[in-house]
Length: 215
Length: 215
Picture 1 (cartoon, each protein chain N blue to C red):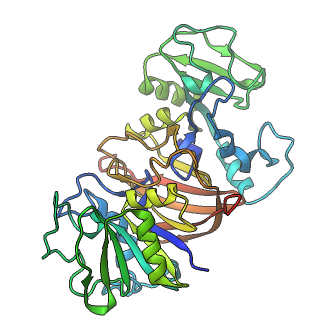
Picture 2: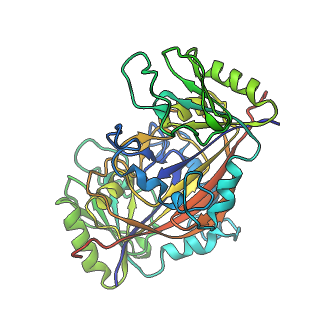
Picture 3: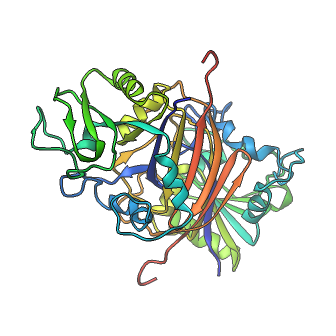
């Protein structure tokens, strides 16, 4: 069955981006260090890297059977403070690494944006339930990945929509920034530990959300 | 050489106690679940438990070569709002599980409290540097364990006094409470991943703090 998942690199103190995110530093101060273990891998989409290690099968599994992405406005681009600057087409150049439909949560309508390589960004203005319904429609029996950022993931988790997730815990402190697993509210899902992978510069922790009674 | 360490059970969302800590629920709402993996172990100090599993050597290592503990006021007892109620001798009964000197950080002076089994509580009113100096004196070439709670550990970490630490990550969300690794400030130590142990209901992540230049 189709699953809704997220996976994300997190500092020891729970941040997925450092303080002061900006156009120049989209992951905030020191935030790039969250990806040090990742960018040297041959499995990294944008890499000239050649490394193959314990992280390789973990990273490869992330896109197996995937049919759609959902992301927050701030993951797609820096804040504009209002309507779209239509010349902005995401951080990733002409051929983004998604190669499938990506549903971007926003308050500002915009026509779908078709990129090279099969990625189309769809802009959803009526909330996470609508984004999820559209992503399910697009993905069919394939999975849906909530790509980030922190607040988007936290919303999906609090709403009980996540089936499985992976935290890639990086041995750094960021001391501030965008905190994952924050403001989740009171009705929190039960979780099972699925498996742990220790790799150079990172530990991957995979969890499954327990079905609620009545699900 | 003598090391300063901490180890603590932490929820996925970074809490070491749940919301609303009280006399009845010293670990706050749902906070006891942080110790579910622990209390069934034969290695648990207060247990009739008989279980031996991957956590056993981890727990046994915590007290190897240990010479002194440091803890915050709120780990020793519930808030009094002022001077000591001298009838309070800690949460642990006549024979606390420490069996060595324990330095309790407090604003209120109190004579040392000698318990059964070798535990003596010393009350330190002049701050963490003084507590650490006294603990080093008492421990000699043995290690010092900063037992908790969250704010005491955070202070020692921010001050650069921790050499090694273990996070026992429990697959639950607490949604609020006492947050570990919070308010660490800007001058954060570098960290190395030492080893990972996957055990029933918990994953133990051991880290070493990198020496700062000039140390």
